[in-house]
Length: 79
Image 1 (cartoon, rainbow, N blue to C red):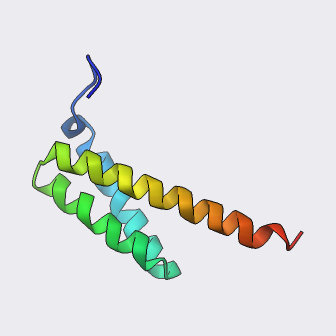
Image 2: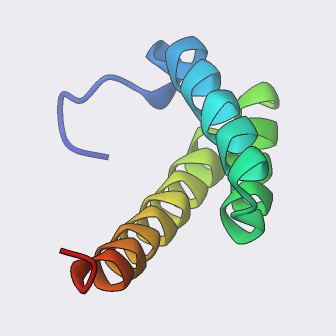
């Protein structure tokens, strides 16, 4: 945590809504790895485990980056 940074709990309701939407969208699109990853921080947020939720959210972010890269690579040749 950065000095002076608000704890994750201060943003937990907004983060929980966003991660829930991401989880649902990923499931709809068939991105099951992302869907399954999104389940974990959602659960950690519900348990108020900020440290675990933060680590899991970073995992979700990394998976999103990989997915964006894969999509860009796939569609690059379509132009």
